[in-house]
Structures are given as structure tokens and as C-alpha cells.
Image (tube, rainbow, N blue to C red):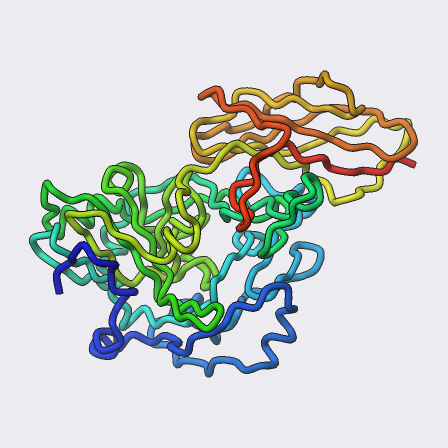
Length: 406
């Protein structure tokens, strides 16, 4: 069925999924915020699906989140899990998949790679096609080191710093991570389908359960991407940090859209519609409207209210990242004054990823607020405050991080 200018079909139609034999969970789940994962799992689980190929990522049940979430690594929000920044201190430039944050709209599905197909269709391609997992593996020759970050990262600070609470998961700054993604350029797949010159939008759709909220079924997660970005650096990723994608991070394939908001990076990719007109879905209209590139942000590799030794030299560590450009500088304030000290950038400083930095400091006894303000090479600098929006998207102001020295 060719694309039209009406809202796209939400992923593969049920009949198409049955025809292909794709194994996936089909019961819609209502997303419940701020309920523990353990309590939600008591409501019911998916049956295990037999292993068709020797793929480690497929050898488990579906669930809200499949991987372990130890409290020393994560803040557990049920279907979401936030990375603790103090746990990131022992990580290198890349965040290991076991430590990487998880943002699920419903739950992690179990998908059989033997029957999974990626379907490319629409009125802006000449040759609609279907590609299996092994076919994509043979095409995999591109990689990107890039961050993925939830659009709501930092949402909790609308309330705690600006006095205007926003609804949704109260992320601090741990809904972000950098990984090395390897797979197939989206443009190469589109060209195999015979991309027409008049293509305007691409609509990737996931195979996780339909998203249900307030009694409304919004269908599978899907969001249009401008053809210019699709043909630039977007990647259909099959690997994460040199290993096949874990289930929670999109196995068997996910989209990686460097520098853009997390919702653009569709997990459990099942179909791609290509149209000669603007496409839309609830995930760029009802949810996440007007969002594309992420802004510049900074985080200390410290716990909240971290305990430091007064009068003893310590080295503050952190990371800054930005969608438009690599980081140019990071200024740190430790005493609440207007002026700051320049942190030393260390290691790689890649576009669409982050820069690590450090600054020595000897704290006096008492409670302190640490502030890190980054500027990227495009000239974008973190502000003191940002405009409020009810969904709590796009918080990128300087965060006041409390520590206690004793």
C-alpha cells in the first residue's frame, strides 16, 4: 500500500505481521508513571518465545525492562530506568549497554530475528522491499559514536529549580548515554528501494506494543524524519559497542539519529514509510511537538548530595554534550559566585557525542552547589533558566548540583 498525505499506518498492520511470522507482543499496555518495576511485573508477563537463531538478545522473555537494574547503577521508574551519574564515573568514553539508560513507552518486546523483516514502502520509493536480519548484517559497514538522550532528560529540574513542575518521569540528567553504533546507513537502504527525487519525509515505526494513554490507543511508536536528515547520518544500528543490540536497546535493529531527540531513534524497527509529502503521527503532534536537535547540557559524575572531604583536594569530573556541535568550553562554579573556573577537557570530543572534563577543587566545610556551564563550538551556551512547557521537554539550563563537605 503506497503512502498518502494522511497520517501513516502505525507500523506493520497485524495481517502483515502475521504473514511474515514476526514474533512480537501485541497486547497494548497503559504506561504508568512512577510505579516500581517489580510491582508492575506482578500484573503479568509475556511467555517466553522459543529461540530460532543463536542470538543472545532473543533468549529471554519480553518485559517492561529485561536487563537487571541494580540500585547502584539506576533509578528504576518501572518502564524507564535512569543512569546514576556517580555510577558513570568508572565508565570510559562509551557507556556500557548494561549501564545505559532505558526509555520504553510500553515494554521491551522479544522479537525473533529469524522471522523479523524490515519493510520499506511508500509513494516515494520505486521498489518496496523487505530485508531480513542476515541481509542487513551483510550490508553493515557504517558506524556512529553518538549520544541518545530522552527529550524529557532534566524534566525534574523544572520543579526543583524553577518552581514549575512538569508531568512525567522526573529525570534528573541520567536519561542520556554515548555508545558506538554499527549498522547500515539509512540512505543506503532507501536507495535500494529506489528513492524518488520528490521524497519529503521518512516514517520509521517500531514493533513494541501500541502505546495507550488516557484510554486512547496511539499505535506503535513512530515519528517522521525529514529526508535531509535521513540521507545525512541516520543509521540502522545492529550493534552497540561492538556487540549485537541488547533487547532493551532495540534488538534486532534500531534507528540512530545523531544529535536529535531520543524519540527520533526508533527501537525495534519494523517498517519505514517514505512519502512525497509531510507525514505526521501522535509522536510529533500530541507528544514531542517541534523537537529535533538536542541542546547543550552538562552533568557532574557525582551523586546527589555527594559527601566530600572538607579541606582535601578532590577532582571534579563530568561530561558535556550538544546536538549542534562539539563542546568548546566548560566553566565550573563552586562557590556560588558569578565567575567560574575553566574545566580541562580530556579525551575525545566528538560531534554528536560528548566531552569529558575535570577540575581540581578543595571544598570548605558545609553544603555547596556545583554549577557546570558548557558552550559548544556553534556558540550555544547553557542558560540559567529555560521556558516552561507542560510536558517538561528540553530542559537545558545549568543544573545546581548539591554536595556536602565534612
